[in-house]
Length: 249
Image (cartoon, rainbow, N blue to C red; front, side):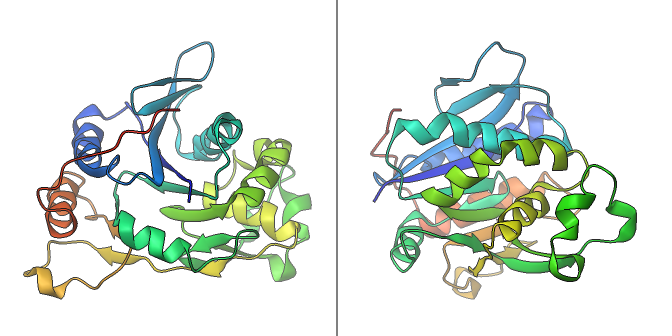
């Protein structure tokens, strides 16, 4: 199986984000079936890989994550014959062996999976730029999955790249997971329910951790605590295992 995992990253808050990246680097290359890269905007002339990071021309911003993601899809699609592509973020932690086990249960096409939710788009968020696309939704409700961890089959990623023009229209007014949901719902594609376990503080004991493949580790109002959470889960899942495989694109 060939899996590409793209991790939203940024150089804007170096102290916080570099700590999270340091934990990711402890395990991001330890499974030969998963190629893992950070994706970051940078003032540069063209997309390029430097080490474990894909740098994309552009400027960081909350509503720019969608465009960053689709440009990364566009860059990586021709690089290999991917079975699945996962888009996640720095404050997530993944058990790669459990992830592969989960992916083996999915079909090879039509996959758009994660922590599923419905969101009825309020009137104040509808404008002349997005009104047409929102109007196609049943009752103005988008069914999508959390942007913290989205699993796509290759064909769905190819569709999103083809719909880049719509993404360019939608991204300025809504979060990336809502925009992707709108685009895919308009194409008759609705998400499958995945499993995401959420922790905001360090469990008192390893035995209290439910078995899963994707853990969202976000300490509200305290980003520095996330490093401790990430390290705790790293020790729990990987222990002292070292990266044994580095896959180059």
